[in-house]
Amino acid sequence: MVKLLLPIPIAYLLGSIPFGLLIVHLISGQDVRTIESGRTGGTNAMRAAGILAGLVTALLDILKGAAAIWISRALSDGNDWVSAICGLLAVIGHNYSAFLIRKDENGKLCFSGGAGGATTLGVAIGLWAQSWLIIFPLAAIFYVVVGYASLTTISIALSATCVFLCRAIQGKTPWAYLLFSLGALAAVLVALKPNLQRLKDGTERRVNLLKHLINRRVV
Image (tube, rainbow, N blue to C red; front, top):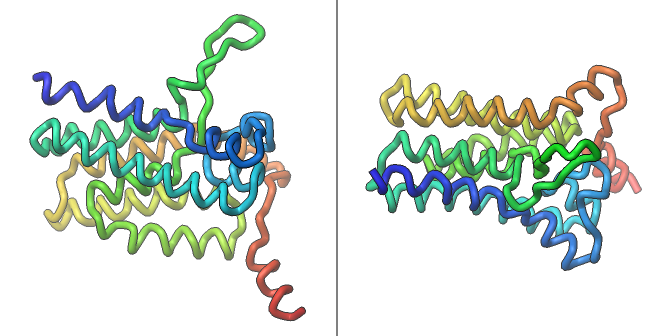
């Protein structure tokens, strides 16, 4: 029983590590929570301290998601359901970090963190190593062509759901992995609720990376 339960809090605490907060503070001395969206993920870290900060943050967030699975498998003797639960807890930890708890003006405890895209990708890699070959290219194309970081994050969780649904139907991976991806998709959607509202209102910030690359080539 201990083997089955121990990985769960470990996964949550691992997911809670706010790498974006740490990286941005090291590079620029700023608190990433006071900039733009206030999230600790790679996109906001890039806005706060540059591309390198964003890339390092994203890579570390991916790594902690994968590590949550590796640790859960080692401690639970490879139990698939424990791995799925740990993967979801890592994403939830990233979005609602145990290390970033504060009280609002009403004295209510509030959690902060990221949106969960990179950590979801990391968990998917931990569950099936080749999953990044599908999820990452689709997310990259989505990011360049559509230009919204929020929708790109959603595309990662949605792609993971499609991947594990197809593989479960084919009998190649357990149905437990689909449970993780559906939970991660729900967590991402909840975290990005303000962004979805801004998309609806037409006020969501767009990256326009494709336009930027075309303009550079023309110049």
